[in-house]
Amino acid sequence: MGRPVLVRLAFHWWILIALLAGVVIGLAINQWWTADSWRSVGVGDAAAYIARGPIQAANTDAGVIASTIRIGGELAKFIGDLFLRLLRLLAVPVVLFSLIAAVAGVGEPKQLGRLGGRTILIFGLTALIAVVIALAITNVTRPGTHVSEATRIELLALKATEATTRVKTFDDFAAQNTLWTQLLAAVPSNPFKAMADGEMLQVVTFSILIGAGLLMVVPARRGPALRVVEALAEACLRVVGFIMMLAPVAVFCITVMLLSRLGLSVLAALSVFVASTLAGLAIILFVQYPALMIAMTRGPWRMTYSRFFRAMAPAQLLAFSSSSSAATMPVTMECCNRLGVPRRVSGLVVPLGTTINMDGTALYQVMCVTFLAQLYGIPLSLMDQLTIGLLAIVVAIGSPGLPGASLVLMVFILEAFSIPVEGLAIIIAVDRLLDMARTVINVSGDAAAAVIVAGRDLGPPLDPSTESLEAA
View (cartoon, rainbow, N blue to C red):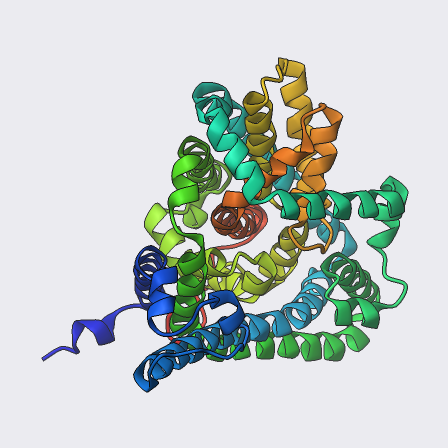
């Protein structure tokens, strides 16, 4: 007799089951657990009670139910936060050691330049295609014309305070930063502080410089240092395998906590905009990336749908639930290993892509700006739309480490075309869900680029290591 079906399930199916269960339970809680439900167990102010306030239960049983609900919510939040913190704990070491090993292990400076140049070109190409897709969809569906005036006013009032905060954050950021200060900020004055603060672009710059320095050291002296760095990078990825054992439970907890607050009412009000954006992201994921991998690779590197998505499923599901490319990056690198991409390629392309390759974000910026222009009746010429597309690519690449950075820097594009910035309140209402979706695109784009770069001038794909996430 074979093993039970549940035991035979691949790891990414466990994550998907946890995600779907979290969606169902989270939406059920949002729909059926109302203010009246809280009052029935003696809680008049749910927000204050969840923040550890006392209850005024009419009877002991009601008090026990309220306390159990609160403890359950706190436990779910703790598990989700712990999981993401453990992944972020490894994000900087993975970038540091993997990039140093990748750059120093290239062999010669000329090959490093060719590998890096090809990576940047692929990133630029995919970003341009994403912008074209966004402009085509928004001109066909015209999502801004499907929102009534009453709905617009209601949504503006709902998130007005948060929108004001985002605009002020942009004003503070813009007052202290110019193009030159942004370029300068990519170079750390103290690499250890950059690592402590999680300044990923600075960590990338430092890692590339150290790797390039090692590349210039004579092989006899470079070898031992390179072996140490490679061993440390592999050790980090082994730890990721252990952490990922918690993934199904953590994904379930994160999804329940999110959707129990979000609900579907706001999504229904902006259904055309949400559907248009998701359609654009789906085209990038299911058409653009596979087509580019087929067109730009040859022989054994030709990628099939099933092979790519089966290998990438753990990273994609984690990216959807966490909304963090940086937290997902160690898993993305391990998934690239399952695709046969050598670590010296994935160690360069994936960390670099996590910092500057943001196709999903670029598409989202274009969709949001054109949506608000249509909503407010502001005409945009073809040249205006092309300019928005180019600005969106720049903003996506240059997003700083700020909360909701893509929305914060969207203010720059809105002001450039005299689109009311208070319209951000409408976008914020659905940003969390769309942020989850576009993170999947960003992560998948990094892996697709790694496959293309590896397949252009390397030998056949490597056999995936036995310490893959599938085995975990």
